[in-house]
Length: 178
Image (tube, rainbow, N blue to C red):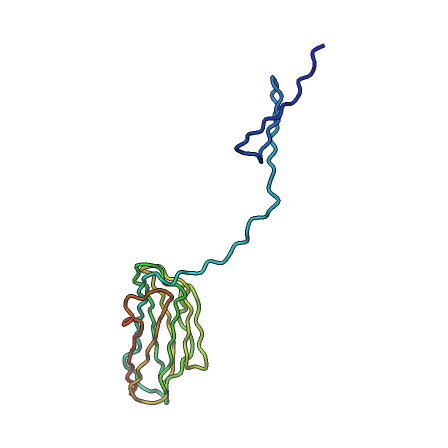
């Protein structure tokens, strides 16, 4: 009688975690992979770089002129925040304090990403997150005035990074109420 073939173990020194068992002259083989018992390290949060050059720019539009009707008038504001690059702008924020006599009523156009809130009818604050080069976010706000006069409203935008043009981080718009 011919003895039955015995399994042979083949270990590759370059891959000690893999063990291969095979029997010559058969169609049978097994591969065993031994996994390490050490778990992989946890994912650590990535801190955005603050030394990248970027240029956060804000532009502001307002209803140019409006007349009081029954002692009040509605004013619309649009705030545009854009990163002119060349790198990403991280943690971009907008702050806009209503001038005396103006009450912010609602956010009529929220940004495409991020979020905004109005506090006490007088402070608009937005967190827009990271803006890539050339990315723009638009925010619309409605407001009410109850006195005649010229109202100048300004918005300020900032981001983490080295802003190459700080002079365009603030923009104002005027409304004449008659």
